[in-house]
Image (tube, rainbow, N blue to C red; front, side, top):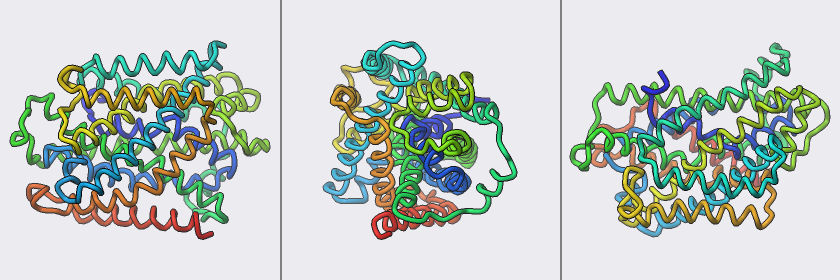
Length: 409
């Protein structure tokens, strides 16, 4: 059942944040069903990467940044965490803008009011609620994602042509398609999810009473098997939602020549005359709901990365006065995100930009994750499986290749 699962489902669902929704919507609107096959490809890749990060957190008893700190020079880690801060802050600002546009469409109230309201509400909940309460809320928010498969079925689909586009890959042609592939990989296999997954494994163990590092080190076969199920389900739902967003926008917007989307609100409004008010409303509600799921994950992953790198007290189970610097990063990142919205950024362009940045950053970070996961000493004699290692190597090579192709084509 949903409540018996853990960080894997939350992480997978958070992957379909407004950034992901915008990227998948642009992919469907611009290229139709040509990129549907990417959802099938990224499922095992994402699951393998997230499971490797989960294993690192569960076996070592520490987050990802703490393990990278033990393996690399300080300057390398500083570059990583500041790049993560920049990408996540832009992403938070763009996610808030996307949520606010969607809420404005539903209520008629100006979107900037919602930017502030959502930021304050999310920040308050992240600081005031304890980890178990936050995890419980995030798990139930996963259900919002079912709005997208329902929307596709409301619209009506030619499943024969969809099957062909899904199982017979159409390789990208030209820089725009390669850039879109990098963006899809970047928003699906995102650096912030790596840090969040590992850190939440640690939070789960702390919540279970394993408060010292010595108590948290090592994991039983049963625990790792349960996490495989958890991560596998999270990755499956994430990529299923991705598939249906690309499909919905392909068979509505692209088919009717609406190939250029400027805002998430425009994407939802364009669905209304083509797919009906119910479908457009579902699409819009999904954007708001998943934003509440994703923004704490974005801000939290940055805070964990900085705290582990700089040796701060950390954790969503701590009160504000016990982990001031940890929570300051969360509040600062969210606050700057609000500022970006009032500076007049274009939400979809910003969301797409962060997806591309993540797509270029992720393979470098994956090299570090592979080095940690294969280190017998750091991994307490429980390194990653050979199959998992090979799949993550393939993922890393594929992301490097897509990034090179984006600039070379």
